[in-house]
Image (cartoon, rainbow, N blue to C red):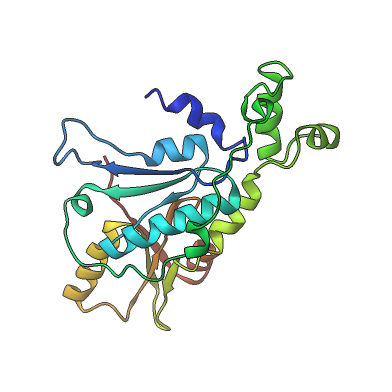
Length: 231
């Protein structure tokens, strides 16, 4: 777990582009212990993308790089063990040649990337953390500069087009799900011939959740279930 130390502060630094791909096995189906990186992602407060199909694995990795570049903090892509063992065809889609042709650049200002920032540890780190939660005061915000904010990250994740809510007019029960569990929910609804009676929210992320879509389900439906793979 050596990576936890730099990861726990990387979301405060404003570095664009880091993407972390993990392969989880929460039920210990093929590994000697249970692995569920959702706890880690929530602990360090970075978005966790949850692809459900091989096509989404490819698409979400690209989305993760685009999102990380925009919000200037790491993004996790969480692949489940059965998806990790799958093989299949995917559509590559268009290649962003403008991005491929960009000149590589790294700002070598060490104060910018140091947790202390030349102001003494842990003073600067604490202020960066407060800034992330919009809890710092104006003088410090001006001193430490424009850094990532949790509110901006949450707003951007909430707006992802990859979140999908299917709510039939006569639905009174809903299911919130993501990742491989979504495919299993669809299989179950098909076997029960209940596709027109159950609302299904497939979230692209397990954290943060799309608040507006979850709120709509809780407001308009009588019962909401959560289907997920757990330890």
